[in-house]
Length: 245
Length: 251
Image (cartoon, rainbow over all chains, first blue to last red; front, side):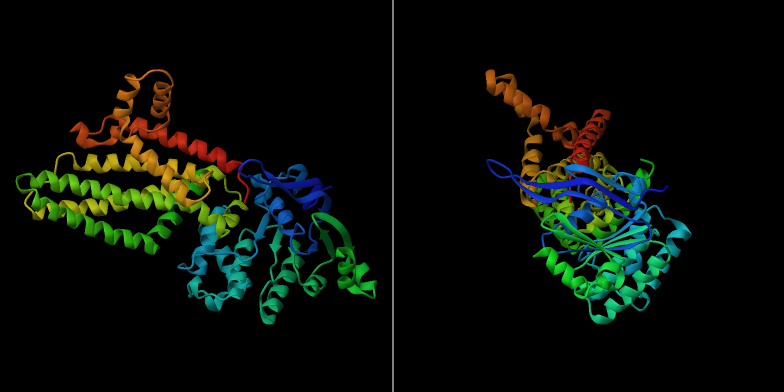
C-alpha cells in the first residue's frame, strides 16, 4: 500500500522567542494527527493564528516539528525525495521586480532540477496553464496582485509535483481571477495531483475540496467530509462557525 | 548532495544578474569611478611622489568601495530573502542549504571580481594618462583584495545568520575587518602582556583573520601560496559554520 501524500502523527510546534533574560514560548500547533490522501483536494480552515501557515511550513520543511512526526510521501519533509514531489505557493509570493516571468520561472525550474528542453517546456506549460501568456513580455514590476498570484502558482507547477500546498491561493483576487484559478486547480486535481489549500473563503473551499480540516487555536477541531456539509442544512459555514466558537 | 554543484551555479548566476541590475550597484559604480578620479587629484598634490600616491590611494579606494558593496550585500541578502519570502520558494525545493549559501557567496565574489577588474582598468588608464607605468605588483594587489573580500564576505554571511539586523552584521564585520588589519600589532601586544590580557589577545589572534597577509604593498612581491591557503581556510571555515547555522534555521 502506498504512503499517503502527507501524514502528521502527534505533531507539535512551539515557537521560541528569545528575550533578554529568558525566552518566550508560543504554541503554534499541538497534538496534530491527520493524513492527506493522494489525489484529493483538502482544505484548511481556521481563524487568524489558528496554525494554518505553520502546518504548510511543516509540510514544506521550512519549519521543523518540536514533537511528533511529519511524513511527505513517506519521507521526512526536509529530504529531497519529499521536496521533489511538492509544489508550494506561499501567501503573497514575491519575485524580483526587474525580471520577466519566464526568467523567474527558469530560475526556480533549474533549482527543481530541470534543464535544457525539459526546463523550456515546463516554463512554457506553466505560463500557458496559469494564463500568463499575454503578460509574458512584461516585467514583474508591472504585474497586478492577481498576476503575481498566477506566477506564484506557475512556479509551484514547474516540476509537475504530486502535491500542491497553497497558502491562501485566492486571497485578494478579483472574481475573474478566482474563477480562473479555481478552474486551474480543478484541472490539476483531475490529473491526479493532491492539493492542500488554506483559505479564509469558505465558499471557495466548499467548491473545490472534498474534505476540510478546521483548526482552532493550534489544534485540529474538526475533519469534515464533503457529504457531511452537503447534507447539513447549515452548510460548511455553519459547521465552521460552530467549531471555532 | 548530487544537486550541489548545479544549485551553486544557478544561485550564483542569479545573484550576479540581480547585483548587476540593482541600482545600488550602479550607485557604487558611479561612486567608485569618482573616487578613482579623486585619487588622480591627490596624486597631483603629492608632487614628486605622485606615482606612488596615485597608485596607493587608488588601490585603497578600489578596495574600500568593493568592500562596502560586498558587506552591504552579504549582510542583507539572507535577511531580505527571508523577509520577502523568496527563500520559501527556494528551500521548499530540493535545494541543499549549504549549496544555496555557497551560490550566494560565489555570486557576491564574482560581482566583487567584476567591480575590481573594472575599477582596476580605469585606475590603470588614469595612471597611464598621468605618464606612470603600471606597477609590477598591480594584478597581485587586486588579487589580494579579492582574497580579503572572500574572507570578509563569508564571515559577514555567517554573522548575518545570528545577528539581529543588517546593521549589526555590518558593524561586527567592520570591527573584524579593522582588527584583522592590526594582527601584527595585536601579536606584539600579546607577546608583551601577561595573564588574562595576554589570553584575550591570543584569542583575538586566533578568531580574527590576519588581513595583512593579503596586502601586496607590505610584501612588495607576488602573493605567497600561504596567503591563498589562509584565505581558503578562513572562507571554508566561515562557510561551514554558516551552513551549520542555516541547516537548523526555520523560516
